Amino acid sequence: MLPLVYSADYVIPLPDGHRFPMSKFRQLRDYLLTQGLAQPEQFYAPTMATAAMLTTVHERTHVEAFLNGTQSTQQLRRIGLPWSPALVKRTCTALGGTLLTARLALQHGLACNLAGGTHHAFPDFGAGFCIFNDLAVTARVLCQEKLVQRILIVDLDVHQGDGTAFIFRNDPQVFTFSMHCGDNFPLRKETSDLDVPLPVGMTDREYLQVLNTHLPRLLRTFQPDLVLYDAGVDPHADDRLGKLSLTDWGLYERDLDVLSTCAAQGIPVAAVIGGGYGEPVTDLVARHALVQRAASEVYGRLQR
Image (cartoon, rainbow, N blue to C red):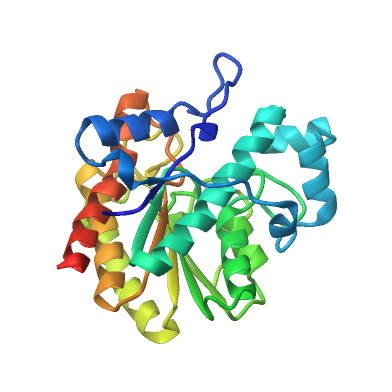
């Protein structure tokens, strides 16, 4: 069965009215189980990422300040989440979840984390609800362990993966590919190995055509040993932070295209859910579940 990674520590209390939809992680797990999309035995529990793992990418001063709760008010405002010991545990566990997902993908061909995609985190600061960059730390750890030689990061969150692009700007082992709304956060973009800025209001078929123009070529030319896939659902038309106009069908076809294209070339994929800020949360959770639906279909093909 498709490996899924989740921990109850992915969800922590936030102040009333906070705009980050923290409950979606637990609701996503419950949705997969109640809809018959997953069985309890499919879930793997991650452990917390260590400081040694975090400092493969992040500056020690940033790591220690967050772990010890000594960040400035300005630094926390840039992140957008109030510090607490629970946030430390949640952050390190979710990052450990992406690393575990990548290890499972290397073993099974495909795996999904029910969190992850913190692509706005830079080496020395966090931003946009991102404290440490789970995609970057995972890629760096796996490369250092020599489990892989080349990693392709496919970032289809509606916002550019600016932190990831900056971190790997001079690293030939990691190729960063970001397809995002050009007129959206962050205001100042970094330079990915391949950036594809999209116009406001782009719809399903246009989006899928652009994706399928680039992805097969990247897989052929870069020949990655692993793909880290950020399956953000904020390109959806109803997302309050998105500015694109994809439907549920478009998101599902996008995920199916990415996963099946990689699978056809024998390339393992570790997927994370990325951003999503639509309301009500029940609709948002159903959107996030699309990548697990697509992954289950592709995984079933791999087992035949």
